[in-house]
Length: 128
Length: 128
DNA sequence: AGCAAAAATGAGAATAATTATCATTTTTTA
DNA sequence: TAAAAAATGATAATTATTCTCATTTTTGCT
Image (cartoon, rainbow over all chains, first blue to last red; front, side, top):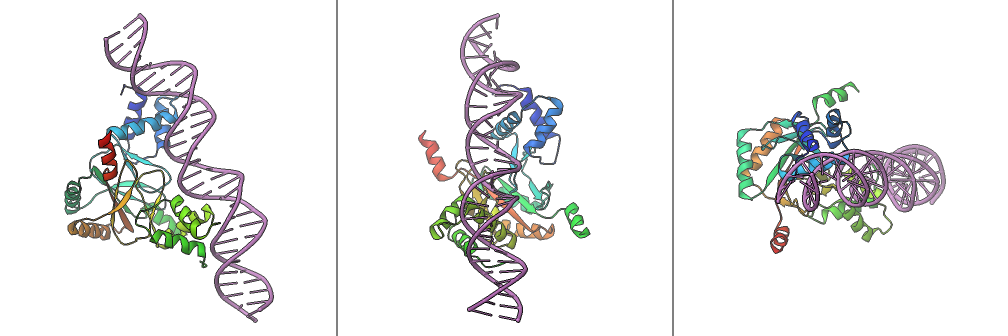
């Protein structure tokens, strides 16, 4: 794999946020750095970064894929109303059990997401 | 919500398998029972069954949504090569920690998926 | 049973995320 | 510095899912 400024930009944009963004958000951020970057290039590079293990996909069951440059084992929360995704802290017994389980069943990794209506959406629901 | 044979068929088709199928598989199975059923009807009913809590979506980060009529708390394994999804047994400490965590953070539920190349795909990789 | 309102349907059009194509440009290596 | 390999941008193609709407089915009521 050769060097490309586009790929480096995709990665640095993703590293700059904790928002678990979708490809189109990453695309629009990359355009601020490389105005003529193509959407397909962003998708291509995200795919390659995932294949390289430098980025993970966060499956939250929505229309768009979410990406994360934090590849350390960690868990997510997701709001089923607005689709927001955040990092979720878990207890250390749970963290340990997950690690043990993962080693036991020889998995390459895991994805743990808790579903919960976020504060913003709860507030909006309360208004109506 | 009114009764519909189509919705009942969608649910019974989904209950008949442990394969965590996608909408198009469910559609083709439903056609064996109701030959003129429409694809949109299957999607509509899946969505309603999810809203009712009779069915869950299984987010595994692939192109198609997967559905599951087993709504008890349980975990999944997924093959990143062929996309197969299966139920994965976990240790009881892990199960307990998950339950505790979920109650602690007031989540509506969680999704835990382990990623691992399945036996079939491993065998195929070995051949080449 | 008969009838009106509400809900559901099937067909197909529309939407939208992602992937593929391909001629051109950039990077690497020798 | 020239050739080979990889990457790019533009855009077409693909495909899963949602929307529209005229018709049919279900339901609650008399």
